[in-house]
Length: 445
Image (cartoon, rainbow, N blue to C red; front, side, top):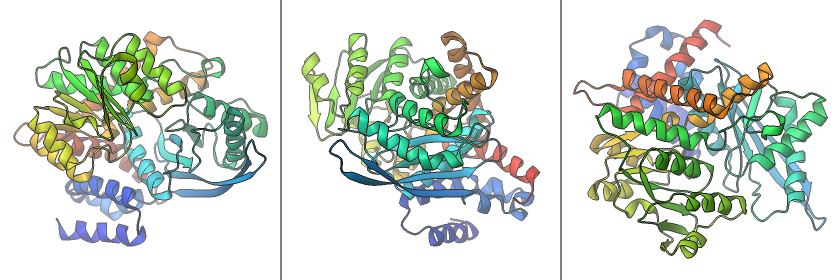
């Protein structure tokens, strides 16, 4: 490692002790953009990278609320407004017991590059709480969301910060938060994305991350002269991302044979399609977080406590959470003939797994692969601003073109001397350039 780069990383580690997810994300970006950064002295003089790894603002607050038993509960709320150089902060709100400042800083940092890649005018941000909606009544979820927004409303707005959903935050939670924001502000504005269709939401938003991931994978294969049709795919998770990926993969002729949950994974050798996809959605909407019922419903194998990466497939698409696929998993996938790994979850692979996959097969990072979700959120913002609604076909076509352009950007900046594509390097430099240029133009702020 370049000595100056090591000094830089050491300083980031010193300033952010114990924030492992954030430090992992920073190191991955710095290692891939460092040569490009050093080749542009004007970026160095303005300390662009040093400024880029510092969030512009971190908001942390308590969220007291009352449960159905009349007992007071207290959670912690966050919003990390990371970078607004190319537009208002944009990124999801996550409700999950694992939410911490480190995880949200990592997600906000990644979001900055991801949003840049879409070419839409959106900065990077992320927020959430350690509140877990699982097992809570609708009344409890509503009261929590209202308490959460009673503080956060001061910091967000259609031209300031536009949150969306994420893990634990779906249409129900977005609706409750939007309703409270509207009451407090006395304004009907496009301050949230992922809203219901009845009050400004966009078609395809729930499926968008998964759809976009498959469009990106299709471009990766096309570059090799291959088609998605006939390929066998392992998917993890069974929420909106996995649901969208399975739906679009099947539509384009592939066969998806796995989904997973905290309890393990199912293996369906005949492929997940038709009523099975509908059952996936029903499982998620039932406030359930296990997949064993799928195995019982359709008479397929269930592997308790295991991950789907042990199955023989052509393509692996992690769709659940960060660091869900490790180096051992990559070795198993390669041994079984896997050609390609594409992260539909944010930083779905550990650092070692991503490096090995880049060296041995074809690997693409989440900031490129899963950008379809925030891309359609950006399209929802546009529709809200213009007070109109596009058709499903129009949104899907725009999403497709955005993902093709992101792939082209990765190829432009990631092509190596031997003709291969380093998608991680291409995505990081491609995302970095637009943000860096905007920061340069706006001065030292």
